[in-house]
Image (cartoon, rainbow, N blue to C red):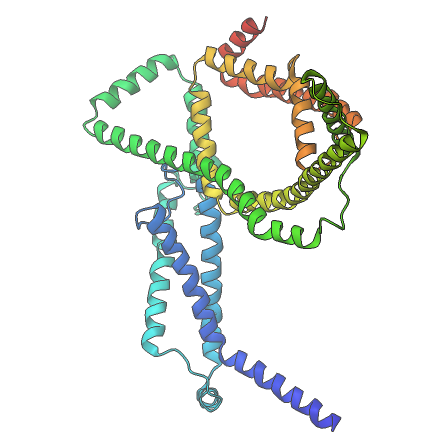
Amino acid sequence: MNNFVFSQKIYHFLLGAYRWYLLTPERSLNEAYQAALKIKEVEDKHFNGKKIDTTSAVYSNSVMDYFESDLKKLLKVARMRLTEFRASRWFLDEENQEAANKAGIEFLTPALVFEKLNFIDQIISKYTISPEKTTSQTLVAQPANLPDEGKITPPSSQRILTPKAEKKTQRKADTLGVLPRSILSTISRLQVELDPNAEQDVVQNFRLTQRRTIISIRFVLLLIIVPLLTHQISKALIVGPLVDNFRKPEKVQVFLNFEMEEEALIQLQRFEERIKFENLITNAPPLSPEQIEDEMRKKAQAVANEFRNEGSNAVKNVFADIFSVIAFIWLLLVSKSSIGVLKDFFDNIVYGLSDSAKAFIIILFTDIFVGFHSPHGWEVILEGLSRHWGLPANRDFIFLFIATFPVILDTIFKYWIFRYLNRISPSAVATYRNMNE
């Protein structure tokens, strides 16, 4: 009996492997087709149906690097799956076709196969450099006098430059000119103003800037709204019912930490003093100890319910904040292109400010976060977070945090000013020093 069951398992395993082998061409073609569809989707969505041009100036360098890496991955998948499709089709013969029909496997129709292959070839051909084109570019880059050995190997200084190498060469050439750069920039500005297509370029640049601004503002709003909505929705629909179900009021302790207990005792003490004071100023008959104790018992129950709800709310906040952080990280992972656009947007804003505005913003941020009065702000923030999560405010940790973290921030600010801002805008650094003095 055991041998029969074992042989049945082997039979089903071999049958499944054979079915997988027969479906290899169709599976490879579908994967290549899906990769081509993704490339087409990027072309239609971001490049107006044209090929993905990695040298385009529509997006920033980081966004174009993201598009280029995705394009390479998709092209690699499409080409590998096409090779797998051709190889697997070559091994399949008529006997395999008959076996597939007996096993109930239906292949794609020839018309559908031709349609998918045609679509894949159309997409891949856009990013395939033909041999003639490569040969013509190489011949253009050849020196006039070939070596005597007949080799067509140009010297290193005359080889074809990639777009990145051309940009680097142009930047070096721009910095080392015979005439001052101000005169060259004036000539360039006059050429732009006399260009008949200057108006179209201005309109196009304005549209690109407008689109970048809309994408950046929308992404910033998403970064703020999505975590907040996730916190409230998860707290109301998921975390809240679970915590209320497992945290029964009659089974849990009233206070999460000793600070809540001290606060409750202070409230009861003030309530007792207020009762006695109101009784004295109203000339009412003095309250008996039993009446005072009854009023205190009612107040104690109300305070216990209040702090019990506050403890449950703190537990809910912990898990709801975890959901918010997950939503925030997920939003960052799926919005890499938007992050590049947002970085470019902030760079243009920050570096487009005047020197006095840059110095004002730097002084404002440094005084708020690392200034003389900043410890009080950090103390309020840390105590608020502790209360939000139901944790006791550890004074030693707060003082240690205030003694180290603002110093680290101050060091980062000074390093950024010395390393980047001093190189990009020296006048802004001079203005900052004068204002800071």
